[in-house]
Amino acid sequence: MTRLFPHPFLTLTLILVWCLLSQAFTLGTVVFGTILGIIIPFVTAAFWPDRPKISNPFKLLVYIVIVIYDIIVANVVVAAIILFKSNAARRPAWVPIPLELKSPEAITVLAGTITLTPGTVSVDLSEDGRSLLVHALDAPDPDGVRDDIKSRYESRLKEIFE
Amino acid sequence: MTEYLEIAAAISLFIGGFFTLVGSIGLLKVDTPMSRLHAPTKASTLGVGSLLLGSMLAAFARGEGSLHQVLILAFLFVTAPITANFIAKVHLHGRSSQKSPPPPPTGGRWATYDTPQDDARKPVEGN
Image 1 (spheres, rainbow over the protein chains, first blue to last red):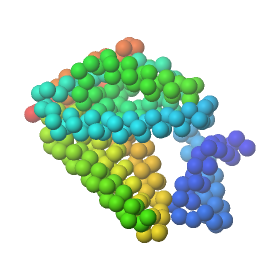
Image 2 (image 1 turned 90 degrees about the horizontal axis):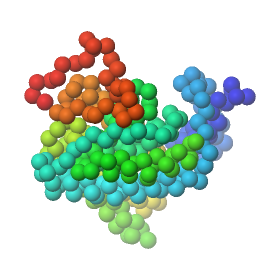
Image 3 (image 1 turned 180 degrees about the vertical axis):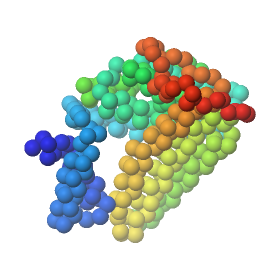
């Protein structure tokens, strides 16, 4: 059973995506979506050795809402920086972040969140995967950026994934 | 009802256009390669997000609602950070930024620097 359905959640997602793509929720699309949902996780199983654990789906929803809110606020802030601040007055900075997260999925979500919230781009991971390098567009106080990311996103992801 | 939807769609399109324009201005105005990377990530979040919301509202106003835009947005949000990450890694690898990043606080090196010596590119002139 585990060999046939290595990732049940991915299977469900694929069925949903297929129904949305074909703009119909009929028996035909569900059956074909299920076929895809079985074949694709089976073929790509080698890339996903572990099954990611989401221990708290409700907190994941809260997290998504927070991230969308942050994207909107940060976009306005960054638009103001780009339009009204000269290059000399801007303080770009490297922000290395020591990570408490261990699971690769959680680190991927954190890195993606950092890139999507404007003003910060995640650049690189350390060799041992215990630090994340972030570049900030305008950070007079890089330590503040690091603490923000750790308290706002990392602590929540830790609750969701670990 | 339809008028309100159309007004909302127009406002969304305007906001999306504004942020996409700001993203393009940023790409031209900002000076260092690493900072320049920030501008296009703006355009692909709120800019494209608003444009797609406008497209969705307009479709509903015409009574042919569509959820394709949700998928476009989801795929874009999942893939955009990967592109940004790879461009950033190329900058690191080519040592093209004026200031090298500090070493990781937990020791070791950044993964991009973990390459054979002769594979590391020389700094590009004029950067």
